[in-house]
Length: 250
Image 1 (cartoon, rainbow, N blue to C red):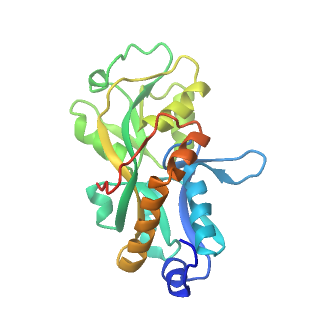
Image 2 (cartoon, rainbow, N blue to C red):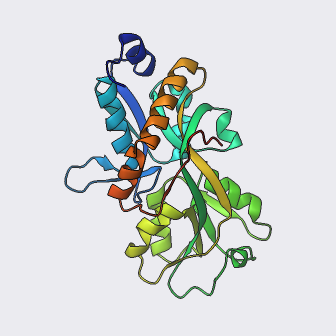
């Protein structure tokens, strides 16, 4: 988007800087970012996308840090951010307007070293302590699929990982890309095959910003088609991540 006009800048960045909300935790995925130990700033594909979009617009970037994608959605009406990225589900569509998917992902469980659980079906047993992050599409799907146990929601990923590390969690529900980035930190832990949730992750804007959504949607489609999204995924070790095809919406 060369030669971006002032009208476009005002629609996407009404305060003068582009405020993009990102989820900051301990994993890197199509949604999660992780704080860089040296720079102290979040890093991940959504941060790269944010910087790239701000540069194209020719405006400063302001990252709005949230504890989860659930918090991003919850703050959509607060006026604190202009654009974000989140997994799509019906509940979230009530609070934000989604554009095209840029990622197609699946969610499963991580079980600790020595766990007797070998399949997703075995998580659905009485006494199994299943956890996830509250107000996320993943935990909502986990709850729908579980009949004999319950998925307990925690406010942030760091708390979930601390409980997992302390042996308080039998199965942790997260997206596969997040789990792949976390497995090296938990020797012997395993990611269960299959999935209980599959959905797109898309660009989002607060409700009612129709023109802004149209502009950012076009930009995301361009960044998919020219290989930028693929490069950003690969740069963060997400070579197996699936870039959504053109026109993909959830």
